[in-house]
Amino acid sequence: MSKPVAPRELRLGVNIDHVATIRNARGGIHPDPLRAAHAAVAAGADGITAHLREDRRHISDTDIARLKRELTRPLNLEMAATAEMLAIALKHVPNACCLVPERREERTTEGGLDVVRGGDLLARVVSELKGAGIRVSLFIEPEAKAIEASARLGADIVELHTGRYCELALDDDAAGIAREVERLARGARLASSAGLEVHAGHGLTYNTVAAVARMPEIVELNIGHFLIGEAIFGGLDAAVKHMAKLMREARAATDAASATATKEAKPSRRPQAASGTTKRARS
Ligand code: PXP
Image (cartoon, rainbow, N blue to C red; front, side):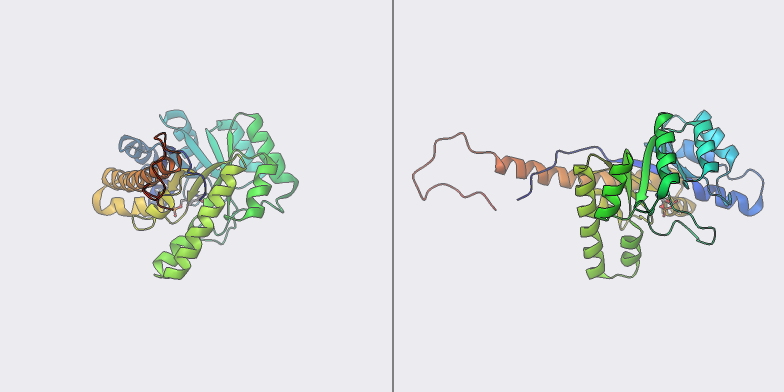
């Protein structure tokens, strides 16, 4: 039996990009992503995530400046590892930067960062961000090579890409879901044992969050599109609160299982009863 992992916190980072998507559909200032960030924090979000894309299709440079100035919780800036984005991050000094792959033609971030072949620019971006006191996260597939390369690069955090798992969940592919959940769980264990803080995100919904929230090594989930979509029907406050509740419930189940495993693993202090009369611990 593997050693039970001590219970850890599980934070919810709310990604507000798609509030800006709706704003930009008409130009102007409504709806305001900063107002959404304040509402998410009031509902219990532990942090706010925003992705400044090269083409500025949703979040703008001004949004980043306002978020950094006015937020009361940590800002996680998602960005490509480019010289332009590095300069912006160094100007605003967010709490963390999550480096993501970016292609102009993609609808959203597809696949994890190629950390193995990231080259000198990726190494330089990681080192300069860290030098400025910014925590560095790399958005990667839950694969050993990517995790090992992230540790070698000196990242503080890896964010495991849950996109494939969530796509399989949409397709109701039970075997695929089980395979992908196991791949994520293995990745989370490996990353944690390599000394990396482990986050996860992309595509998570009320239906898919629990399986990931149960993984004890994961300490933060970043969720955006689904929450902003749900907010249309019931408000952002209700959506964030319900997501946080599902996360807490799933993590509490892991903590309870871990506590039971620890108790069962401890040798009994009572004297051994005569052979054959001791209750056997469940294996
Ligand atoms: N984490 C990262 C690194 C992302 O790029 C995104 C999408 O911007 C998310 C989390 C959130 O994904 P979603 O909007 O699908 O919840």
